[in-house]
Image 1 (spheres, rainbow, N blue to C red):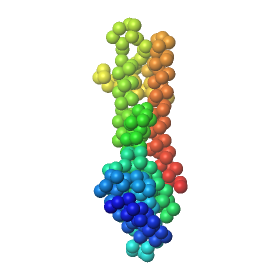
Image 2: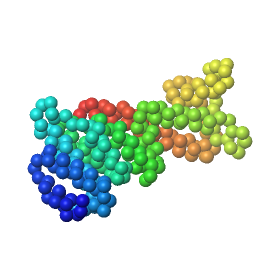
Image 3: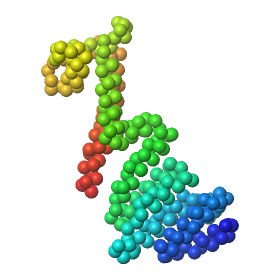
Image 4: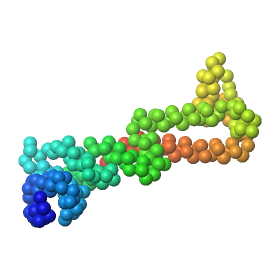
Length: 238
């Protein structure tokens, strides 16, 4: 197909959503077959946006029984091999916007949106990537909280050298088992209403280290709680 042929297809686009869907399908296939046509008239990304909009609209305009759309077909277009992760994420947001006009929240695309966000953030901002990853799924949230607790267990162990000492964990005897008693004391320190073990900062380095640790702890735990609990309540209320 030459430029003139594909430009003719664009001119054939009109008010008929079903016809437009078929035309965009042909345009997309043509651009896949000939890389020279990719940016003719408009980008492939815009072609797929046009296809998604017309496909969803055409289904909504059909009579009962013919008005359901093929989700797999929509995902196939979103995950076109020629698109970047950021473009795919943009398409998902666009499709969800179109669906919202027909009382469909597009929740079936949420998991895909999350994974694409992670892919984009991994390349652009590692801190935001870790923050998003830690709260993206219940399993990941539990892993993050477990990692924080393990790090805290290691951090509060008695220092091997005097110059490394930052804290003094004044333990209470909860168990005859040494390691179990240590874990119980670390947990008890986190629970302020338990009157027992005490954590004492031995110097200014200990104070600074504890302050930094608490900031990181609050940022991650609050983020996890918000994304897995509060956001769910907000979605329900809507």
